[in-house]
Length: 151
Image (cartoon, rainbow, N blue to C red; front, side, top):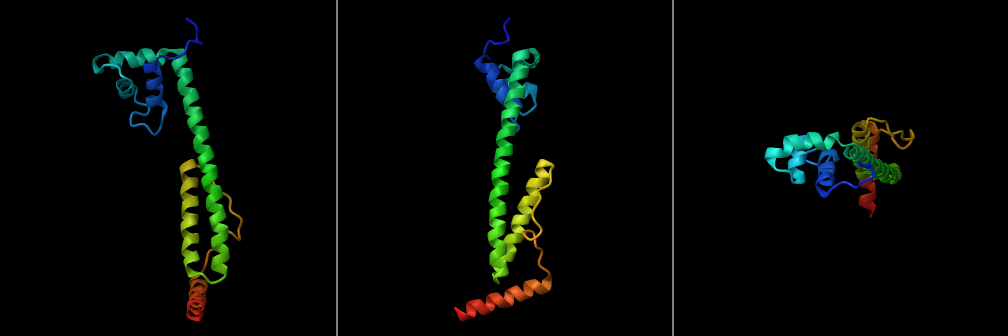
């Protein structure tokens, strides 16, 4: 039997259901077999046979690698957008925009969440991640009130 033979439609459906971390049957052989169209009565035996196939094992590995690549790309885009927003908010905060201070806090939280999800740290230049003390926040608030009063 050649390992270059393509997967059947059911095998491919099984790979998607089993290997996709967004699937409700992720890493569950039996449920993935049922979702792929195997009868519940034969799914237990079928999933063992499917995963014994070298072609299916290879397809699972390739599918997971593709998903990982897409997620890494999306992570990079999210970090780039958040970093750009952080720079803009920093400029506004330095100009006295009190709402920008809250935006900075939210952006830093989002960056931390991404960092925790991916088990890696995100390095932000020190001036981008400026933390405002209570006194600085009060000063920014007074500047913002002056700006709105003069407008």
